[in-house]
Image 1 (cartoon, one colour):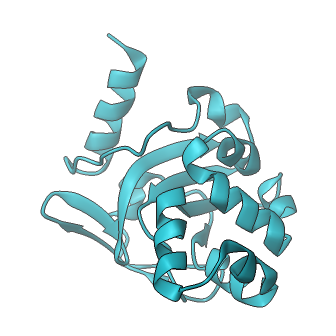
Image 2 (cartoon, rainbow, N blue to C red):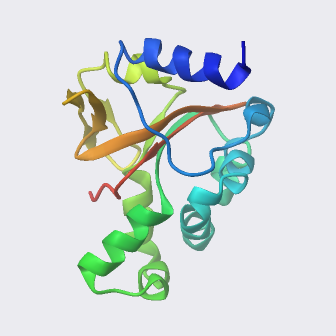
Length: 168
């Protein structure tokens, strides 16, 4: 049986039968040997997130810091947010305090795989916010963001890709 089919089946089982769609290209399957920054660098859907992390000065945290879970907004999520705010990417990235607060609202201490996300009552972010997981119409959500890809494993954490930017 194909390894990718097994991965998808395991992910569906981990989410209690909730089917999670995928966004374009996903992080590589060898990602578990990489740190969080390397996993995000390997995902074309996370280019803007990587740029934001670097602009905020948080790259070292993902490059071997403590175990973390990242609810990673896709490129489309960032583009939609910038359109809603009427702001350029450069303007958002130049406001380091705002950018850092937004990014930390997507990060939870510890490695929280998909099966544990949906069984949690709430998850506290490093930015001090609270993310509440839910299932609506067969789709998994964290806050108001749909989880579109689960369990991109890194050596010190896990990444779940979401379809919108979670504001503090």
